Length: 488
Image (tube, rainbow, N blue to C red; front, side, top):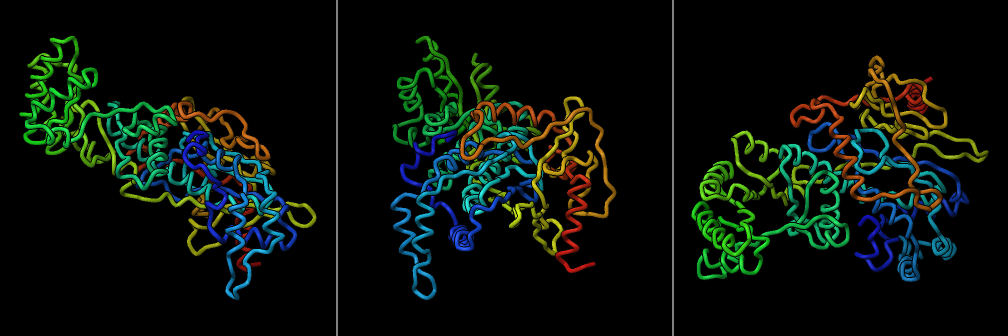
C-alpha cells in the first residue's frame, strides 16, 4: 500500500469519511468561505502502550488517498438520497456539483515516515481551502493512527527480541483485509523482518515467511510421516511444527527427517514451537539439535507473544532464534487505538490575515496549540535531545522548551549542537513531492530508535522525551486561553 490503494480497492474512497465532515464542508460552501485558507494539525496526546515514543507510519497510503480523491457519479448519487430531519435533501444540488468538480489542492507537510515522534507535536499539517482540509480529517486519522500504533508496537516487540528476527504472523487475527495489509506494512516499518501475509509481499515487497500448520500433521497417519511428506514437498523450506503431540519427541522426529534431507543434499531449516513453556522447550530443543549435528537449524517460537512475554522468555535464557508474533501485534492488543486528533490551528479572516484558533478543555492535555506549527528537532551528536514546537509564520523564538501541560513550569533548553525541522512538504497543491518508499521508512525508524535514549525506550516508567512550545507559541496560547475564558 505504498501507493497501492487501487490494487486493493477498485472503486472510489471519497466517502470514506464521517458524515459531519460533509455537512461542515457544505456549511462552508453555503457561507461562501469554502476556499478560505486554513491549517490543520494531526497529533496524538499520549504515546501508546505506556511507552515514551511512537513511530510515524501510514503517510504513503495517506498521500495515495489524497492524490486520488474524487467524488464519482455513484458517490454523488448516494449523497443525493440522504435526507435531513424534515425529510428534505440533506445536500443541495449546488454543493453536490461542487463536490463533483473537487480536486484536492491542499499542501501537506509531514514528518518523514518511520520517524520517532512524541505527544503533542504535529505528525502532519494540512494547509489549503478549509472545506477540503476539513473533508480529509477522518481518512487521514484512520490511515495514520492505526499504522502508527502498529509500527510502534512492532518496534517494542523487536526491542524485546534483542536483535533476533521477528516475523509478523497476524493476518488471520487482523481486523479485515485492510487491517491485515496495514498491519503488515506498519510492522515492517517498525522493524519486523518479514510477514506471513502473501498479499502484503506482492503489493509491498515485504519478505514472506511460513512453515506449516497443525492440520498438516493431523492429516497424516503419524507425525514422522507428515514431516517426511513436507520435506518431499518443500525440501528447501523444511521447518517443522513440532508441538502437535509431544514437543520434544517432535524435535527428535524432525532430526530424523533432517538426516534424510541431508543425505539428499538439503538441510533442516528449523523447528517451530507454538505452545508450552517456550523458554524450557527451546533450550531442550537446542540441545537435541546441536547433539544431532544441526547447530544451524533455527528454533522459531510463536503463541500469543508480545514484547512483555518475549522479554520474560529472554530473561529465562531461551534458545529461540526467530519470533513469530501475530494477534497482539496486528491488533495492538493492549491499546487498540492511538487517539490521534486533527485540530484547526489557524485560518484566514475576511481581510486575508491569519487568525489563530484554539480548543479549550478542563484537561490541559486537551487544549490545542495555536498557529501554523513546525517541529524543530534538537540533536546532541548522534542522540536526539529534544523537540521544540514553533509557529513557522512567526519563526523560532528560541530553543527553550515551555511545558505544554504545565504552563507555569520554568522553560528548559536541552543541550544540543545541531537541529533540523521535521515537517517537510510531501504534497504540494495535490501533487506528491519526493518518494516515500517502505524500505527508507524502515531504515529511518531503526536510525531514530538507535538515537533515542534507552531511558525513553524502556517499557516501565519511561523517561519523558523533552518536547515543548517555543516562547512565541507558549505566549500566544496563554493569551488565547485567557481571552476565550473571558479573563482580562
